[in-house]
Length: 421
Ligand code: AMP
Ligand code: GLY
Image (cartoon, rainbow, N blue to C red; front, side, top):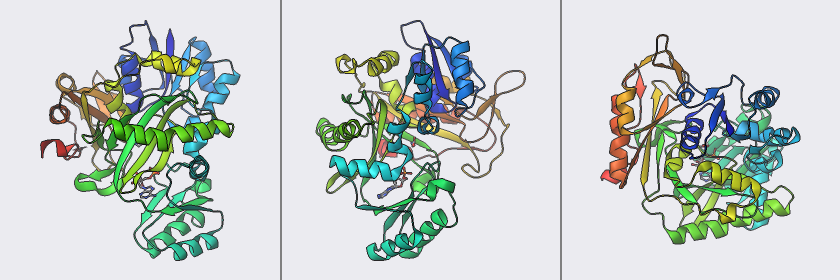
């Protein structure tokens, strides 16, 4: 069977890595893939938004199943297009992916579903938005409605910062059309947690939790990034918490999506805030997270292909989806300067030694002339340590992070540091 994974990050490398362990005989393809994943898959040079090229590649290589990693192709309707062409694909339709692609749509679904959402209001007019900020006070959260590569959210500590954020999005058009509409919402306080489930539009699989680190420097200092590491599961996760989150945050939303004519099929990713008043939803994403995929897929005991196929053919309830008790800690290596400008093309050494300690998932790497790898743009790779305890998992991830050498290597030292306190 031939499986194509759309995307080029460490998340997509992790999906391919997990598929490569399938006892079924899989031939793996990636579009566009990355240099590391090329060891287990054939890379197809098509960007994730070039649907004509992706459809043509799926035909040319007789792909039986396509799995989509990133949000952009999902919100642009890759699933609808593939289905129209008679091609099998895993992920939500464009209508269902609005749960990630439009924050106002997502909030309205949560409200209709009776799921725990902060108070919010939606604005298309900057004057009305400013007036609302004044009426609510700070802290307050300003969000561009559409996708903004993780940069569309401002948690404003005072009114001036909130007004600036309104103007940047709506007047300065910092996020283009994505910020023509904004959502202004109550600021939640608590512990952040991400949960993931597979769903066929009605059944929700067992949830798996992860926590990530978004800021570039230790102690959550510096700018936001695509993610600098994380761990799964958090030590305080338990069955009662899973049940509460499933019953209040996930199942009502899946039911509401179906009720409103946009059933959600695929992986639903809930970003939650555990507040004193219980779990609240920060946002939903329509896919696996990065770096969370790198943390949770090594903990999946099933064949990923079985789970994906069951989600598509309606037999997910009969799959006994199991997440192992093993702990996973992931440390992201990035070039110095990331998420700002940084140099690429630096030789990477020590990978073979690192791979003795941890699973290594490439993102921004390139094949070096004469063998080996160099750094590319953006984050370089995720080192994922596994162990019976989080301390063990963390030690392995850091041992691997230490063994890899490249000029300007940057990583956080405090990933999962609670485990050694
Ligand atoms: P997002 O781009 O939606 O993932 O938001 C980025 C980050 O902003 C989240 O991970 C939270 O830390 C924070 N955030 C978003 N919405 C809220 C909220 N209503 N209250 C507090 N923090 C929030
Ligand atoms: N870990 C954040 C994301 O995947 O959106």
